[in-house]
Length: 318
Image 1: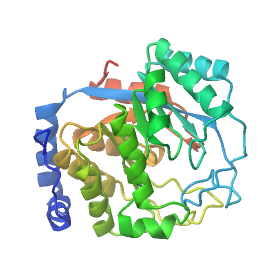
Image 2: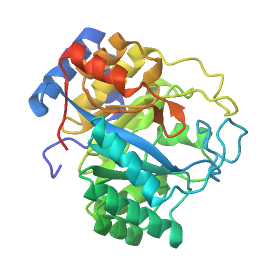
Image 3: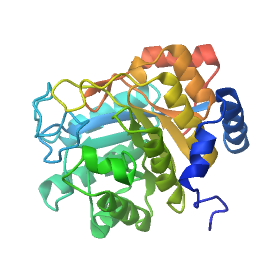
Image 4: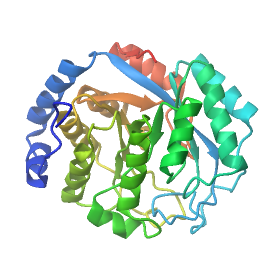
């Protein structure tokens, strides 16, 4: 516990926190949040798909997988100028971080990676925090991204180690951890979380939080996603996530990882304003801001601006 925070939660302990009476859970999470974060600040991040579709992975939730016939078409890597224009638009509407996602299984050295490095460098020069999600990467590639100015790397654990095997067969849970290890060793901040609503049980959700809290230091950013059900994926007919399940996950993550930003991520477009605000009250202090999340719909910036105004929230500085 080199950072003074806990990394040794037992699954039963997390389950006990998660299952507290809802108001008691939210009260505890809110107290932790206020101790470590400004009470009314919200980090605004924009997520841009820089290379869409055709991914060789078989992640059951993902419309970009080449294994499934979905509405998402395969597209080539965007040009640096296109990404730079998107970065400027994101900055103009209030975002402080641009996360660039490429539908790759892993980073491969060559012209495409060189182009990503240039994107990172030029987006950073625009005054935005930079984040990428590119799949697995080596220690050397992580060092090159850091040298280009990368601030954060997103690589979600998705679910518990046990449930993970039922939604992804083309890479292992340990490979995900290895990528996060390479990211941390390079001095890049870690963005990693998971998805609920894929058919997992509460035990799996708690086990995922245990794995996230094991990381030392804790991830700087922890996205909690609700499954977006996309036609053509194996999970298209899953029932919608109960918004209170999302509140419980966010509150539990806040208690376990007090200093991390907990991000209310995918699935937010299906939540009412009240449900979103309850998630924020319970500890979420980061959102994706913009019309789309890679290839799925998101609440637009105008609606978010109004939501923040009505609740007295302000955008966190970069």
